[in-house]
Length: 222
Image 1 (cartoon, rainbow, N blue to C red):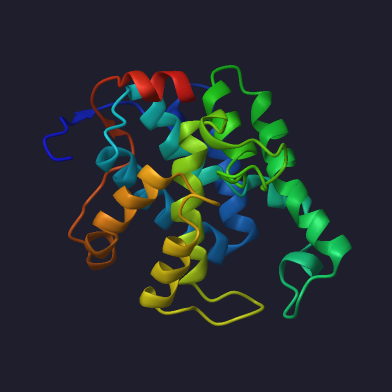
Image 2: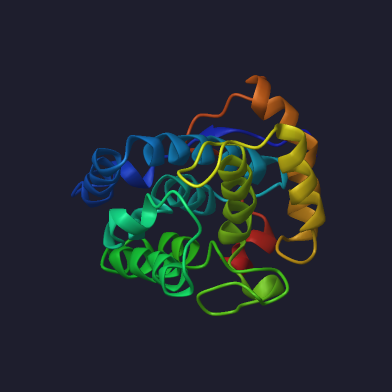
């Protein structure tokens, strides 16, 4: 999938009014580890979008910013649940799942952030329809959300969390491969597996907001 053109586009974070920038700062102030996770996911998501030949400027903007703000809804979840060192109860897990809805609702108030809102709301949907919050499946899941779900999972698996230590790269890749076609879009999973080693070593340098041209599939799916 080489040969994708590159051009500079404005980040949604930099749009007039500063609403999204304020949300990003609030998220960073709430949890430094969450902010670091969001920054890595942002870099991975844009790289995967390019590898998958998603080149519409508006789509790349939404993926870039959606990756940075995908956990913004966790501002509405108590720390005692988010930072719990042991397994969550059923009720606690249901509470955490609300972050996708809360995040989407927060962004729905931003006039220019329609695709971004859909990415944040649906980044925990599964290819086979078993995800949340709306149990969408296949191509009904917004394309940007399908991109985000893979890279979000990889970084979460390879990062320390209150309830477990980071898993190894190879273990995480094995989990991603097992979920191909059930949790994750098969084509996007294959694209991610092609570039993940370069992402880990820093050989793939991505600036948030870089993009090129429209793909028909991408235009339909967001």
